[in-house]
Length: 332
Ligand SMILES: Nc1ncnc2c1ncn2[C@@H]1O[C@H](COP(=O)(O)OP(=O)(O)OP(=O)(O)O)[C@@H](O)[C@H]1O
Image 1 (tube, rainbow, N blue to C red):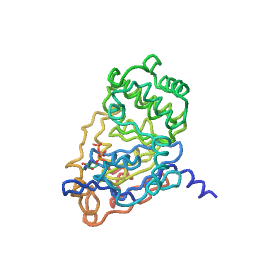
Image 2: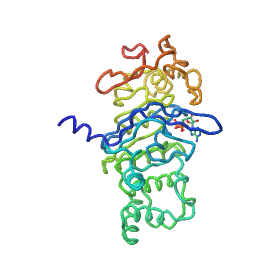
Image 3: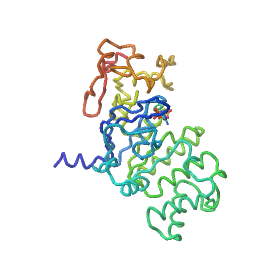
Image 4: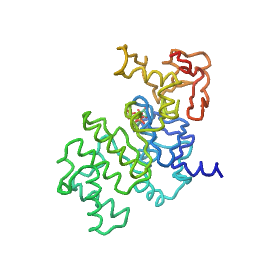
């Protein structure tokens, strides 16, 4: 019974997912045997350097990989226990957009420039909630109000909004169907810090009030600490460490995570030199054997070059994929 409850608790489960991009005779292995589970009401952060495969993971869930170029070559993605990959197109479309929605870094890419924002949100509501024009308009006004946009602006076009307001509209559009899962891909990178803080506060409130789940993709570890309960660290298309935010941030155990945390300035305590991670991020077209981080890792041993480590459980809230899992005894 307990086991069944645990499984039912799993909203999104990505199992052994591999994704490739094929173009011009080249193959980029963007995601490699990735596993990730998001539970109902949980906020998870997905972090890693540029090119780690974060966006590809999100696009795979949304079914938005570029046609004929990006393809899932292995694994499964289940939503409430049902495979999104095997599902019929109609059922899939019903879930994507209605139950799962996504906020992009650049909201202009998801908003249509020729329609007013009121019209766009009304259309989403009419399609997914089957509402009459009048009821959809009323609800659109309420959702926009929720994200701090007054109803007199419903007749304005996307270009008439500032960056921060536009991102609010993007969030409103994503929230229009009260999704169970919101995927946000760097939703605040293009914004200045005060607006960033407002948007994050807004997302935090909405997640709490609607009890939705959140997958927050970001380079910013501070955002994860602020918003999420769990975190998954990605490198070379794999999750190399995951667990509760507190466990992973206080006891980072993969040398990549340790490197990421050492590169973040701290306000408290003595001033310390920031240490960057040497070398370049793994090239998806030429991934190394063994642990994908080994060419950049100061703790690399022969075994790391030859064999990919298994994910090991450090405790029930903390997992790591490293032969030389460090940092557990303060030996960073
Ligand atoms: N359309 C594409 N065609 C070919 N390769 C691609 C394509 N999109 C992404 N890639 C490659 O796939 C890998 C993963 O990219 P992805 O955008 O998923 O990483 P990311 O972690 O989201 O990075 P960022 O933070 O910069 O968005 C990279 O090596 C990237 O160059």
